[in-house]
Image 1 (cartoon, rainbow, N blue to C red):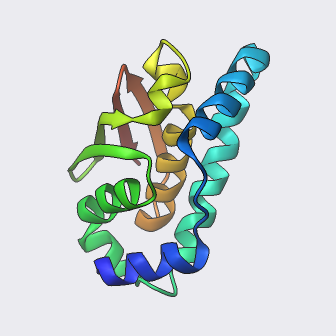
Image 2 (cartoon, rainbow, N blue to C red):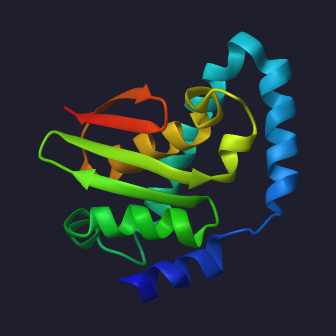
Length: 145
């Protein structure tokens, strides 16, 4: 499966310098203020789009069966950092151990909004279920409905 993930990232991914992304994102957070929730909503749509784009490389059944590895490897290989994923029947927990996104704002629950939205959209699309997300510092809990 990791070979398929590498192929997807090679064909569909874009690499940008982390400092550039942090600077741009920090400025967006500074000026967005109360509109920061829009970032999360936009990221959720991007997560759905990513899951659909990944479908030709990894089947839905394969993605569900390997969801923990898929999320952890995608996050790492895409250059976002290190996360640990716990997959249960009704919820998925992402523990962000390290991410350059955390440098964009002093509150992790604010700086991780793009990841929260993207994970919620991606996981909901792959699992074919609605999601509800709660963020506790660097811990992202996605409930599956």
